[in-house]
Amino acid sequence: MGLELDSSHLLVSESPQTATKKSKKKRKREKERDDGAAAAQLQNEPTINEQPRLDVKLELVNNHVDKTPPVVGYFPSGYNPHKTNDINDAQEPNLPLAAPPSVKLYRNAQRAKVEKSSGEKNEKGRTSERLELVVSPNGSNIEFVGNSYKGEAMAAQLCTYALGVLDKTTQTLKIMPIAGNKILRLEPKLRGSLAADKEHANFENGEITAEQRAARIRQLNVQYGPKKSIIQDKKMQALRKGDDPLSQKDLGRKIENAPINKDALESTSGHSARNIPPYNSSAITPQEAYPLDGIILTGEWDFLEDIYKILQAGGEVASNAYPTFVCNRIQKLREIQDEMEKKRLSCIFSYITHLIKFKDQHSLDGAASARNHQFPSIIRQKFLEMFNPETRRLSVEKIDLLISYVLVLTLYADDFRTFPADVSNDLRMNPATVKSHYRNLGCKMEREKNKYLVTLSVPLEFPQPKRKFRKR
Image (tube, rainbow, N blue to C red):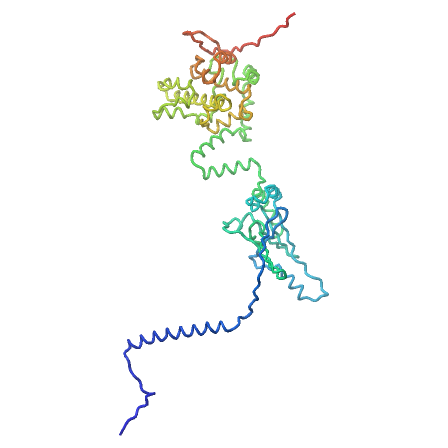
């Protein structure tokens, strides 16, 4: 019996490894063939809703100072301002149309003036304008408010926005800048709730008093400033305690109970007339004649320790940084054993230095020597208030007052017995003129070792003005 096999039903078994390799190659070829056929089909079939291509003319519109550019905003809440148009299109012609939402744009008038005067070249001035856009739907208590100076608008912006308007009839695409270079985020708010933000808005618009600004700066300095700045701020506050109403009330109570010294009151009234530091004409000691606390205030001593710190560190005082009067007495400071006395006298020398350097800075012949001198801020502010320099020069009366302060401190430095030669050199004055200033302070002149010695005797005796007699 013969057996015939149909080749169509014949199964040929192959090794699994050979079948796997061939199947991978076959699948790859089939995939490439299918992708090519799909791409060819897409090219042959026309696209759905294909827009006709337009060749447009590009036109750039510059920003004009007298015109408000377009304002662009968006509603994150999903509000559609064009909904009223759809309602009007759908309703019957005889019915009244729904009113569209009202749109108001607010600009900072003060900043707008600055922008207009700066011209078009000042790009920074234009983009810093503050805008506020308010969209109020008709018949609703909700209004949408967006601004360009807080919230999302304050985030970092690394691009410039522009608005494009396509005119199909003229085939022109106009590119123009938008207002404030910001896309405003219109947040929903209840009508009337903006009044609660009045204080915050006034601060942002710069409408705060000088006291409020100083208080805010002081608060930031205390929170984030360096330790040295915080200590200096506390000392300045201690000096300003007289402005505190509670301190004023307590001070008034003490003044009412204090005895009145009529002689001292009379001497104080003559201070402005004699143009000298505060004095007490009835003093029985030289220290009481010109009280040191009336010249160097309590809060100023801590800022006058530069010479004392140099001596503590074992350094040398630079002759080009300090007056001759001070340099000639450094050795005297080194020999003082009492640290409190050494520190006190060092601070007096520092105050003399600041006074002389302040005079040099506001004079023609000494400006170069005081160019690099550093004043503590509290000392410089006091000198500006006391001597009130007109531009870069001191008046004659203020120069005489400054010289009187220097000479009184030189008396303290030399135990009220001093020679005027070195301080005359520091003040760039004739010794005879300096002697006249000493006499105006109530000092006496003596001859010692062929030099004039200045002493202060108490009670003070001021020279009487010479009377001029008319010749008959």
